[in-house]
Length: 228
Image 1 (cartoon, rainbow, N blue to C red):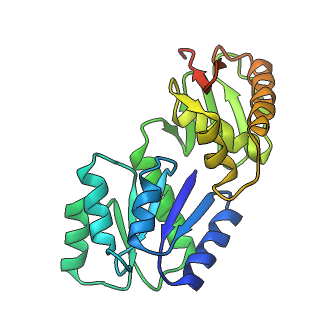
Image 2 (tube, rainbow, N blue to C red):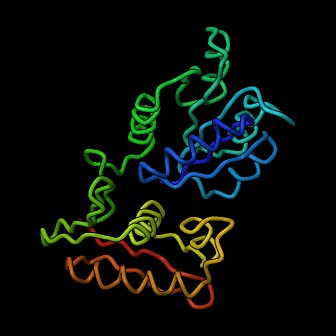
């Protein structure tokens, strides 16, 4: 899962990025509302942690803008504002949850898990299910319901497989995949994508899944999903 943290306090933002990366998430940061809004609009993020008091324009305006455009990415508001009015305003604009600073990291992680389950109809006991494939985020294990076979994935394989499963039957360009899995500032090249797709194809074949990753000439790849 890729998480965007929009927080102007650099120390807190960097601490959250480190903590979330340590928990197996992919985390990026933005220092103001304008930058955060632009990053959300890329469609690369599965969840947003959004402060209210931000430079340029505040978190409420970020939330208003994305919801008015039909962007339904889950949003957890992180803020020192704790009044009922602030919470109601955030919820009315489309926030999924609200956490008041200071907060404990275990509580934030629990909120992230809760909002993720709520926002995805394709989860089974915190595992991601697409067609005949199930991906376990705790063990990085890929299962096939049709064969009962399973295989462990490496970290990048897991991140790539999760991205394909969350966007099944959609064509993903090599640029999208590179940014989503390796990050904006990575020097990874497109052939990295091809190599890891090859790894995943072998593992999907090993578990005897009817799903497959197909090449789209000149563009990228698509996960074609088999029925369960």
